[in-house]
Amino acid sequence: RMMHRDSVLDTAVRRVHDATWAEVPGCTTPLGLRCQGARRLTWAEVFSGLIVGAMLPYWFSAMLMKSVGIAALAMVEEVRHQFANIHGLLEGTAKADYKRCVEISTTSSLQEMVAPGALVMLTPLVVGCFCGTQCLAGLLAGALVSGVQLAISSSNSGGAWDNAKKFIEAGKDELAQDIGGKGSAAHTAAVIGDTVGDPLKDTSGPALNILIKLMAVESLVLAPFFKEKTGKGGEIFGSFDD
Image 1: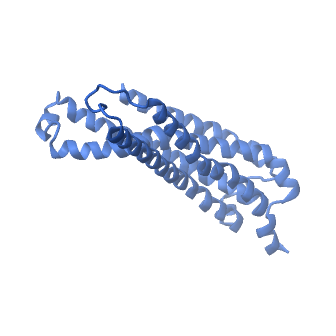
Image 2 (image 1 turned 120 degrees about the vertical axis):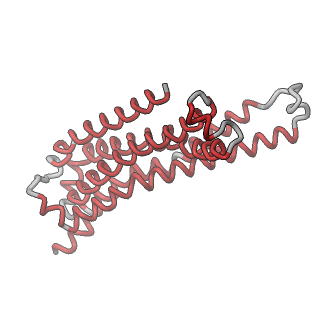
Image 3 (image 1 turned 90 degrees about the vertical axis):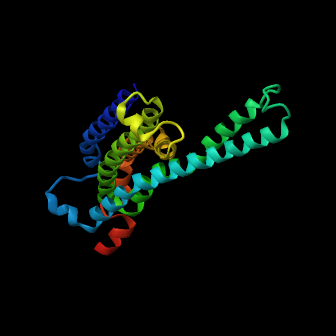
């Protein structure tokens, strides 16, 4: 069941890739750009956009992974606080404050999504205004190629780490019995891998679909504005032409 879920995630990533790639002509035409050969990739505007775009999925993924850790740490602190202050909770005679735990999860989720959301929404706007349409086209291409690779890698590797722990705990396979069950060194390592794998396959991988799609859609909507107000070079690269 878990492997089927991972294959579904991979299929979703590929469909986002195909849909986003299909929007490239729709973005480049309003931007006033035409594909005129591979040599255009060596232009400073396009190449710098490719570099920044290829970096964005990794930055975005790192921010999400860090946010998961911050939210989890806040929940751990609350659980420790309740165990220390609510008498009878360990014995099962008292009721935990579930409402407070839900509040922490909700608040942490909303607060920690501000920075990644701003990164996705503001980057095409800033690049389009200050660096021009050619740099923006390079940004989208770099983010697409890098984001698809990272999304598939995160979903597959995260699912593998998560299922490795379940594989060892089940102990139904001869290999699982040889490396040891619960409490063994292999199981301890698998638990650590599961801790990293869960946010990879459940947070980082699916969220990269949003980064790829949202940046392309936002650029498509604002393409006429960028073409009219900033041109191909923008404020930065346009000054070199002057």
